Length: 302
Image (cartoon, rainbow, N blue to C red; front, side, top):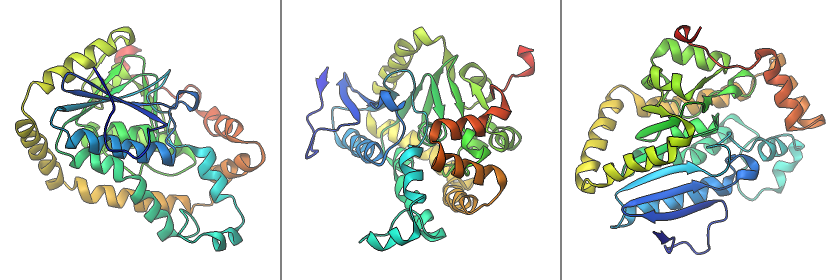
């Protein structure tokens, strides 16, 4: 096992990087924030993935989250603090802000989605290990990985579609088909890991206490293959998905998310008001409360 000793100018603050054999373990490390995706975390994750792709001693990346969750989504507190500022605040920026116009919104999401895009485009395979919550932005990251494994009780979904927008990274149709994609995204309901495996959203699911061993065994097996060969298989499959429109779908998904952000429907406006007056906890409670536990129950479980 090796500690990170790469090229970054300063030690990363929001993730961990270690090498076990030929496996790079990259750990989202904001457990106190349920690994919510801040700008800093996204940029440090980008650097970690590039580091893994560059190094001769690494054949595969295992991406995981510290604490109770893989990733609970985007850091909504910082995002809404920005967008709720007075419009005159735009004048204080030397660079374009991530709000204020449709194009600014698209631009900001393209920058943020550079990490999911990188996961697809880097040569070495990336395996996501999901436990706890993998929600909203967490799925943007995880579902762009080459292989996804999960704990049986993990929760996977995009509840933000209930009031906030749409996934700016769209793999849902390619993984579960159009009907299940619509079912999950229109309602924002989540699926448990064991059901996600049945639907094809993840490769496999195991009891939570077995997930670490299971994921590392899979990563170690993938690491046995020369990078030139695994890269060939990865890129062939990705090109096949591109032939099905996958790449252009990602661009369209970001623009549709920006369009959704312009909405003035009652649920969206209520969420913005709750954020401004009462904070994130109240906003989420009011957004998700009418949906109950929000967990899809497959008929075989009834």
